[in-house]
Length: 505
Image 1: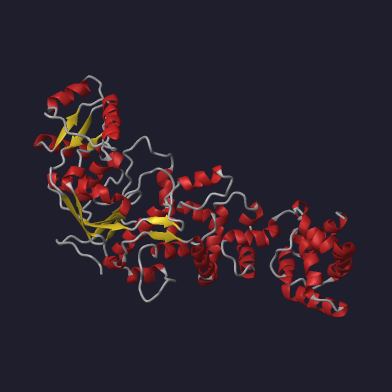
Image 2 (image 1 turned 90 degrees about the horizontal axis):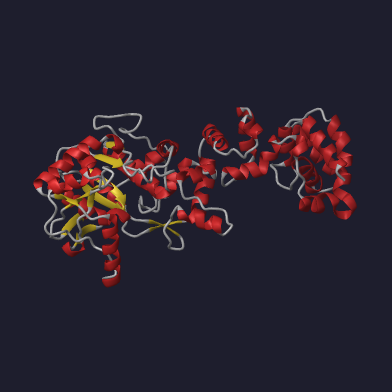
């Protein structure tokens, strides 16, 4: 089911992040569901930047968010860099608009200047915590006049403007959760404009949703308690109320909420931080196709036990009535399985493009690999089959792009393969070296035929020859098949590495 509005407005949805860093995976799921709904209905997907909280603004965050969205393949129809009929799309550039509607609320009696100082509010909060276990702002009686508020500001005080909440229950109609009622006694007069003159999230969001003609608001359930405030404010301003759909929250498998603080906690424990932001998964070597496919199933089901879907297939199947109410669980092993599968499903040119992107955002990979020719990287991907994420490719074939003199020999590999049985592996290398130096056909097929012939002549299994060669050229026991490895490394570099290995004895 694609929900429709009660008027003739075409469907318009928005994603409105605050520029506080890279895009969180929960935000990515919200973007995706909005984007899917717009594409399914032939509507418009708007990107709006909510940058009115100057204390939380992080430098370059907007570009990071835009880059994350492009990497996921979720392009916006109106917003930054594109513009559109309802711009500007940065809230910090819309202050005159907010001030105009603030004046309307003050004049109509729906808003008032609140004159309490920060010290007074802190005292009230402390008293509330002591006596009732929580703080709820109580409207002053009588409320300050506009003249009193302006006079306080003229005197240099940072005075806020609050909205006068109606003394009645607010009912939110949600197409996922049904009717949600917030009793009047739980409502309080909230701030519309902060002391620095910037609007709060609640005020700017309501004004922008109306002026940008947003018909449907899809956001996480953590915003549900904000919605009654927005509905009351819409009524006071004479704005239409959009269709609301609050999406299930994403949790870790242990039931804890996925939070950026998870990374800080892991680092404090001396552990590798988990992927939380979209950029984390990009740097970790996941394919955007796999990540988008996976997060589309966090709270939504296409039915018929289907899971592996392209973005186009997801658009065709997407409907709000298949979004559940219960919280979603982020299963990282399942995501790894998805990524392993997608690495075999995408075309070789697309896989190569994705590898190039991974190399570009990882400064620690061998520079020679970033600079390698397309044909070389394509061959590496061809021989590194079955990998889960791109770091597996680096672990398996990164040695090909390291200078010969920089190869570091793993102690365990040397003891197990080369030095064991009185240097049996070293002896194998000494016997192989002249024959390899004389080998004319250094193609993968030529090397494979040579090794098979050598095994037959010596009546040994391939491993007895392949493993010493593998340690000599890679420093470890891990590489692609040995004939493919030597062919990719080249004859001269193979001989150089074997000689260096033997000199290390």
